[in-house]
Length: 140
Image 1 (tube, rainbow, N blue to C red):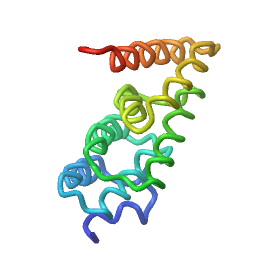
Image 2 (cartoon, rainbow, N blue to C red):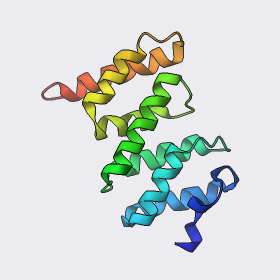
Image 3 (cartoon, rainbow, N blue to C red):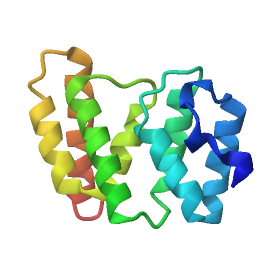
Image 4 (tube, one colour):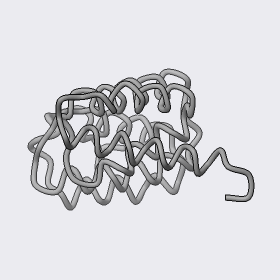
C-alpha cells in the first residue's frame, strides 16, 4: 500500500489525482484501502476537489465490507456534519451512505436537523427525510 499511503500524511497535502486513484482501488475490497478511504471521508480536509472525492468514496463504500468501527466512525461523522452544517458539495452521497449504514439513526438526525437555524441544513434534512420515506415505501 506504499503507493497509496495517504493515511500516514496530512490529507490536505494529497493531490486530487492520488485520492481518485485511491477511490478506484475500493473495487478491490482491500481492508487497508477501505480503512484509508474511511479515514479520508471523516477527515476535515478542504482541499481542491475533496468534496467530490468524498462523494465518490461514499458511493463506493456502500459496496464494501465495513468493520463495525468504520461504520460507527462514518455514521457519527456524517450525521455530525448534517447537524453542524459543516459540509461541502455533493453531501447527499454521504447522507446516502449514512442511510445505508443505519436508516433509523439517519432518520432521527434528519428530524433534529429540520429545526436548524441554518437554511442549508434544513434543506438537506428535508431531502434526507424524503429519501428515507421513499426507501421505506413498498414498491418504491
